[in-house]
Image (cartoon, rainbow, N blue to C red; front, top):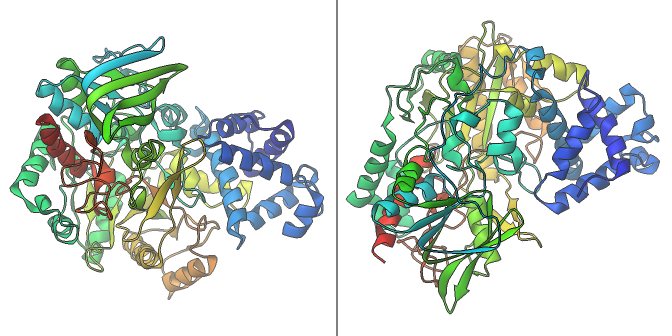
Length: 633
């Protein structure tokens, strides 16, 4: 669905109001982004919203301005947009954030625009290297047969593919995204988001309160993640064994699985040279006397230079040991077949047995018949696939954990150039155990224009441009929350996933504690001005008595509801969780879907709860163990 002509006319004016010196075609480019949104309901909602902007009655009632938006003065338009951003009505905040994010991210990720805010863009062209994997070409309606079909190629699916191919199984891997390797990693943000992130980086919860960033490319999230490779914490393993009746999590078998995947990926702490971002974090932690440690990373020969900061758009050096260059290449060398740009719509079921999958590749139908079916599409798409397939289990899609992430940011006196250097090198667990294993981690992450555009509060086009231009001297303390209470995945009438998630009061208290501690840390690190990614710009300058306390009071007054504080998820877990009963879980201790023979799930959706650490290694260990089980069936 494309926007109506009336909505497009309004969008051009909205884009010009949001972005100073916007190019004449910005509105048209944002319209194309809206047309590419995965859910028809979201596209229709934005079309209606933009048309409502032209209603004199609506604008008078909501903003006290009895004019169509396109006939307002510049000052009136900014007043109007601020009223939506700050509204106590959640739907108005949602509408503003939808337009603000789409417009500002589209603008600041346009090639060359970053230079206006001190961001250099790509550091040269990608290398000219060959593509070692040759995906099948599906040029007509087709049927394929194999021993095992795997839906997804990331941390779970990639490991299962490599291990089962090594066991002599005939394996087919189906990947929703395309196949891109180092030769395709242009490091242009807009291109990377469109080609390697799910929904072009536009996936969100239903209320837009949480941005969902996950991979959609051959190799999945392992291609675009930040290389952090924690073993599953012992306390979490014990919790899963005790509370969910899964004793294998504390067994030597699972320890062996963790060690095996860590060895294959070369996980180490010797590639942890701190970036300027990390140095700010370390300085603050040491001044406070708080814990910090080296992050384990799945890299070999990583130079940890300026280019390393672009690793979220793919590692050009193949230093990051993603499944793309490890397990998937292992599988390909042993005869595994791959189909990319493949949208798997359902699992075929006959009398309690799973017999294969049905998918679409471009305009062609693809049926894959297999003895075993492994769903490893991630915690958003795995439950959606099972729901589309008619599987009904009480826990299916529930208990979704997302490790909601946010940050406190600061203007520093020195150049930080936060897009450069080791993607993540240091962390702090000072507050990881505030209550029975729940709390938050401090980490850093590269800040490229898209993340800065999401985080920066909008007050006016001029204010926003000034704040964006401070990017080179911006530092952040990233907050990674272990959430105790989860959300849910359902599907719409088209079978597409809907993410429902609302931060619980329990978890919100930990987020507030995290903002206060992160601000204190940045003060200790020498910050000039400290702010947070709120719906309005609220900052303070350290030094005045009670400055931080007054800032927190203003943050509290601004609100903690959806679209009042930016929340992002890089880790999605637990929506097909493992357990001891079909009443409370989706898969059993051997990754089998309850009540369905030959059907397995092997990704982060099987976590019994949030892991509390970057989940990649845990996913891989679960998949390694599952592959051993599947190989014997």
